[in-house]
Amino acid sequence: MTFDKRLGLRFLPYGANYLDWDDMSELRHAVEHKVLFRYQTETESMASRLERTVARELDAGHVLAVHNCTEALRLALVSTRPRVGDVVHIPAVTFVAVAGAVLATGLIPVPVDVDDTFSLDASLLPDDAQRVIVAHMEGTVAPLPEGVPYVIEDTAQALGASFPDGRRAGTRGYAGTFSFHHNKVLTSGEGGLLVTNDERAWEVMRCYHDHGSARQPGRYPTWNEDAYWGENFVTSEEVAAIQLQQFRHLPEILAGLERHYAIALQELPDRPDIELMPRSAGDAKISIRFRLADRDLRDAAVARLTGQGIANWTLGKYLLPEHPVLKGRRSLYADGFPWNLADGVPRALSHDGFARTRSLLDRTLCVPLSPELTEQEQAVAAKAVRQVLESL
Figure 1: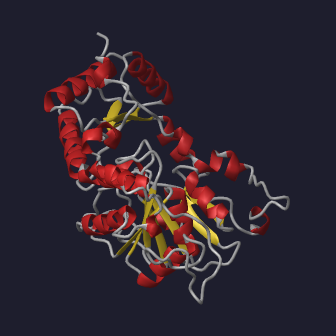
Figure 2 (figure 1 turned 90 degrees about the horizontal axis):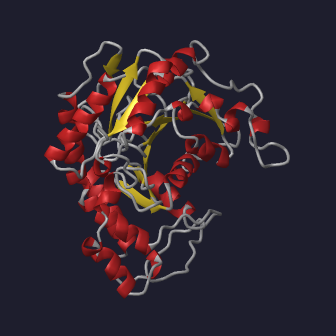
Figure 3 (figure 1 turned 135 degrees about the horizontal axis):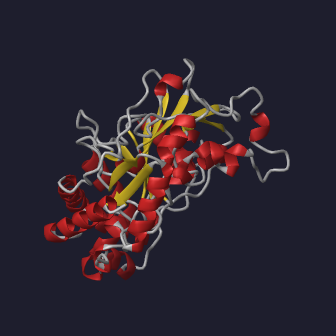
């Protein structure tokens, strides 16, 4: 049986499937007013409205809209007032943008090995760790290390997820970062958010993201007397408008993912060499994840699923110690900055040189869930995945 393509390869994942011209009232408003720069609006800007909406939905103290999640990570790091060459401990399994944000801030990333869920293994952190980025990979809420002054939550893949105590992922650490990239829970193509409950940190972030000065709506450009140099990470009104439209659908998307996950659990393959990687109640269930007996079986599953038109992915590309940026300590600066400041800094922290993690990655298979499908369609999709995996 060839799987119904309408339920298969999903080029428009999650929030993108909810983009609809008839639902774009905020975007129409921004265009009709012909002001797309947030600090020149006469009334509340779309960007400010977005920040207010997110703060309410996530129960966060302060929110700042930026161009993308990488910039949000940079802003969070800059606001800690580091010295160039300071170390930032990051997960060994995550997207390379995390390492890139650290390096672009003049700091040194040190990958730290992960546990069975691909969450950073805090037991490997040195006692004097100052800055740690924790990634909530694949919607899985990772535990936060204790006793670290600056814990930054990379929540790019886990918007809407919750910790066991009910607090939203991205709101428990020093700062949380979110992505609206195309392949995220919500999307505006690109776009990011920075969340913090630290008011002084937010003031630094707000100034740095707009050339070092706190702008006032309708009074642009103005400069603070104590302005310092910064960069331009200011989001635009049309992007914020699309993000507002997307946020209206967040409860619907999360509920659809939960429903599809529950249905998929009823259609698990009946074979001992394919195990489910369980999820916690608060995870954003963007996929169902399997751990197979070996790499050959995983590769056979990838080939068979792809041949049947069923979307799937693997996670080997996320092993940062093998990425050229970290493995070769590559830099465009003539003097190798900031790697030239890394004397004495360990390349990575692992119990076994990442042997266990490589094995886990080699055997892991992810199949995306589809919140926009009806319950009947989700049942058909889950059965198709089970049939393919049982046929291997």
